[in-house]
Image (cartoon, rainbow, N blue to C red; front, top):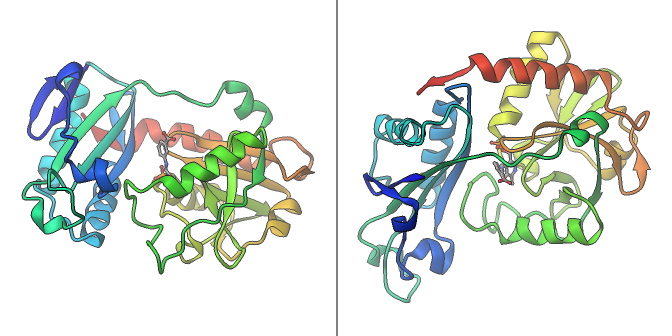
Length: 288
Ligand code: PXG
């Protein structure tokens, strides 16, 4: 496997960063998870825009232009002869000393990995997931805006560990006020009386690229969609529920906290949205 690392393509074994890199020492950096479908990078421009916004939010000046980032991502796919892949684009503050001071890190580290995708087993797309609400709250915007896709994932990782302790693959995380924010690595949607509803970014949701595509799909198939505050009650009593994310795509949820959602089977709107998403990814992308 060839990895893009600071302007060069290197073998996997040589793709190493320093133990003094602040991405490792402090989680000081931002990243993107992107998918390649049939030779098209899904919504690459949107991913790069979010990457630039995340970098701006942490006052990190990207050493590459939009065009250079785009080329680095596409060339990483080409170098590995991939047509379908999971792409990880990362920028860290770079090498510094053993203090927090980011201004003592002269050069950001940029790398890009394009690798095979590990998906949820197919049965979960057919039958839906049973998930739980975990005790760890999603970090609030006053502490660290959850809209920044930063390398600080401990909050989500604690949520993921708790999900596993409860025997679930994903979990709903509430915000500090107790409203539904998102899952550990996915956005949450419900369907109630024919309308698709999802928490807004102000509730602690990442502005997911897959989430964004749901608004286009809903418009396309003529189903109303809106952002709204949401409690666990709203999910328990929804007709349908599904999650979206670059890794998960669109995955039905049929149970939350032991309460069956709707009929306990993936709902009709969820199935239509999932089918539309699978068509969209084949046409909506940047050709590598
Ligand atoms: N919320 C959080 C906290 C995320 O990390 C999403 C929502 C969904 O956003 P996108 O833009 O992907 O629709 C994410 C994304 C993985 C993996 O390996 C995780 C994500 C993306 C890709 C892979 O578990 N998280």
